[in-house]
Length: 93
Image (cartoon, rainbow, N blue to C red):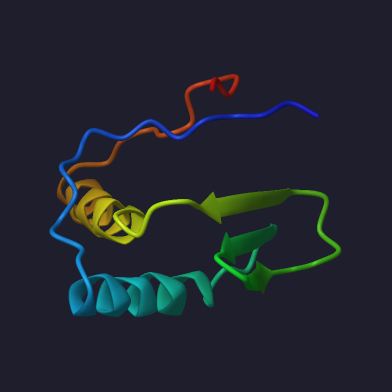
């Protein structure tokens, strides 16, 4: 299976405590609208699935830092301002 990475140019919004929780809820609300493919989000002990479980296109995101939610929110805001391509090729670690 070919992997891809997500490349963004955005500064994360402040995401501490209550702000992080609110940003997480907003992002998850948007993910619930996923209609093509499937996405599994692993955040701490919680495993959430969005989209179609049986679809050939599947991805998994493991949250290791709560600042992710601020980064996603800032990226979404930037993407609305100007369209951009995020998939850049093979994933790197």
